[in-house]
Image (cartoon, rainbow, N blue to C red; front, top):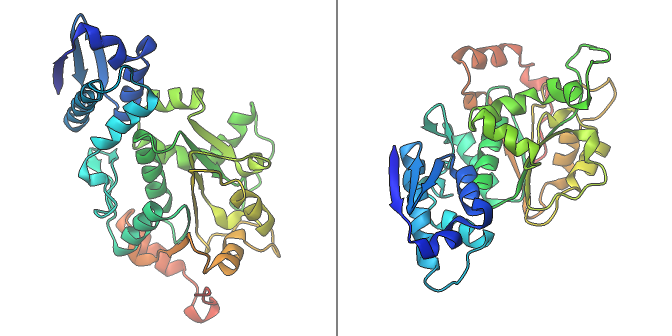
Amino acid sequence: MVVTIHIEPENKLALFGMADRHLKMIREALGVHLSARGDELRISGEPAAVERCAAAIGEMHRLLRRETILNHEHVAAALRKTSPARGDPSTGSLDVMSGGRVVEPRTRGQHRYVQAMQNSDLIFCAGPAGTGKTFLAVALAVAMLRENRVRRLVLVRPAVEAGEKLGFLPGDIQAKVNPYLRPLLDALHDMMPFEQIRRFMANDIIELAPLAYMRGRTLNHAVIILDEAQNTTPAQMLMFLTRLGEESKMIITGDPSQVDLEPGQNSGLADARQKLTGIRGIDFVELDKSDIVRHRLVQNIVHAYAPPAHTTPPLPS
């Protein structure tokens, strides 16, 4: 879809920003292509994104009636005001597309999970493979990034091997940790163009990091996702949780049935559940086999491999 908007010459600099910074911000947020020629601004891309972009430009025009100059916050406000209803917490859906469809919860458990992520700043989600723990967390993070509600997206995993010793991996640090962080990157690729991901990573807007690199940091204005949290120790979990900064959201996901720690080591995910239950502002969500939305066989496989019910102690309520 292509839309052309007429821009008054006297408003051009205020709307576009110095060095077209405002246009770049809108382009990154909505994934549209913008080109200016003379007094016209051409917008092309997905229909919903183009319509929202045109509405945001119109909102910026209205802001100029009472402002002499527009800044980053004005542009962010225009984008938030034109955000579609599908991103509203009451609908459960997210303002993100994957495979040409809006990302939304498909089971009751996933709906509870999305609501918890929208309402709380610290969320734990435990469940078997295929329940969408990581995918939905990344979708919410991308939506918040596009709506300028946060400035950064930090994706974290512990560098623990699943029953195999790979030895020393070649390459620089990015090449060494890439195999561990690949599942998070795969989820990201489903929702954002490759070039945009690469640009965001180059500008430190999106960061993929092993858990060990979190020590000593304070992460403000960010969504921080810790995946495979069952493979953290209690000490690592404490270190990670205390990285939460101002105006940030932290999402911890894991599968308690797939712990790859050394024998005798306690899982930081189970330990956090015992110690943090009941604290206001912290949400715990548990997904089960009925929430599996991957291939239809995955649900049967998880059920077949599940230990007898009497051997698994219940989690504390």
